[in-house]
Image (cartoon, rainbow, N blue to C red; front, side, top):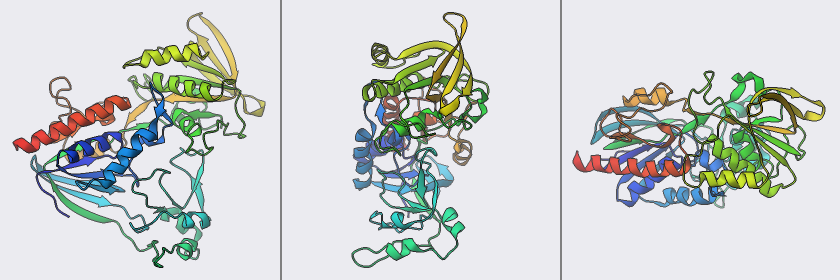
Length: 434
């Protein structure tokens, strides 16, 4: 594999990377889109709705994902990571490590292998609240639509199973399982690079007062998102993890790990709005469920955001300005939440069936390693650093390398898309002037 100085490398296949790649490709640029997971789509593909309009998330993103696959100017390198970068603007030499799927690219996703697989492990897609097989499709909307064989778990059961091999036959009798497939390194040449690696969400085990990981009915906002998503483990039915029953009451706690020295010192910018969205969506589908949002402050940054707040309040969702302090497990799996009502200055308690923690948005775990590979800087919170966010947005200290979306700071989807287009324009300008 090669390339040219007129090609652009986009690192990250979430909505930011997808938008940047499509903008570049439509302008006639050759694009290499590298995604470390087995499918593009990122966090947006996990969501049920997007705020403030509550439009279907995958309905907006899936056409863009398919456009990436269909565009001749985009070469999609999924299940791959950037291993080495050398050179300067106009002539970057990049090594990319592609992991083995142990399934050939001509897989038709017929599902027969998954049906017969005897191994079950926790499903990363649903944040551990469901199970998947050792051979699995990365998501219901996977692009590329090719299965992955998890050899770490497959091998635990010895080499004598091979049921997936027995059933995997296409119309021509070819088998798509390849136990001997190996990782490989590709070399490409590009003129500019866009970093769109996105963010991670906090696993709030260190926030001990909320008992996450100890009580099954204490879950994170992303786990709740999967519960109310039609593609999720319950088919969109709201159910408590402990017993599968529909909760009669749900409480959301804001700023879990945000503005907190134990995790993230900054506001995550989107937590107030995604909790309002989740509560409104729940109210629409389950009008009988009592809903509470416990918050420190209410922050509405963007267009239409305050309107969503007003909609939530008008629908009967209870906003409680407070400082939650402890969780007690009650018989039957219910939870007693103890908190300080900061408006009335007194201690209160509330019993709920399900508790949702609106967790902080964090810099990606791989940011530091990727920054060192690219030769760019990261800030004190682990996000990629810009030279000057006001006068030179998206530009890093290395000419020809740009950042956008949540790789530079927490942002919502609309702002992420806008930044991706901006970074794409910068990358094209660099090619035109180098």
